Image (cartoon, rainbow, N blue to C red; front, side):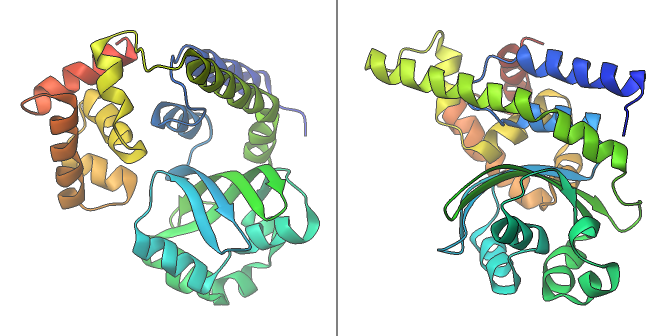
Length: 255
């Protein structure tokens, strides 16, 4: 498929946005939010899994232990199974690897995706080394259509740029390790290091002015969970409340 000029310009805009981020990890909340704007979806995440051990090594946004346990009890999902059988890492939709009727009858759909209102999946395989698998996953709910061929092609086109982000992140980690000391460029950087991936994501959304209810809807968690994460953020960052946390987030992002 040949992309329209508007799609190519949207990709260039995404790359410009994420290249301006001075963050050591390749897939922080800010990158995932920009990807979500580029390819419309209800949720997007980065995952790394050990297929042999049937467990997630990393998941951003982080899932609960109960969610992880449920996933492996009814899964893996057809896309992950397809990757492990074929080694194909190209961007694929759930509908590309399993028929609709069969998919709707799977425990993975009925017990994992359907209860939280998710349906359509678009996945970009990042690597498959032995039983270790990494990917970016985009999801849509029941009330919208499946991902288009345009969406699939756009996601696949990002592959070399995402690899470049990973390479830069690895280089920064190596330089940091070689330096032999944690020497953040500012006190704000030092505080930010201790935040978990979920806490950084929530802090980013607070900086954008979103309420707990809005954040909960966006991240598919409860407002109570958002409140608890924010309490941890306030303590780690050293601020008294939401307004100060929002200011901290805006200063961190350069906004």
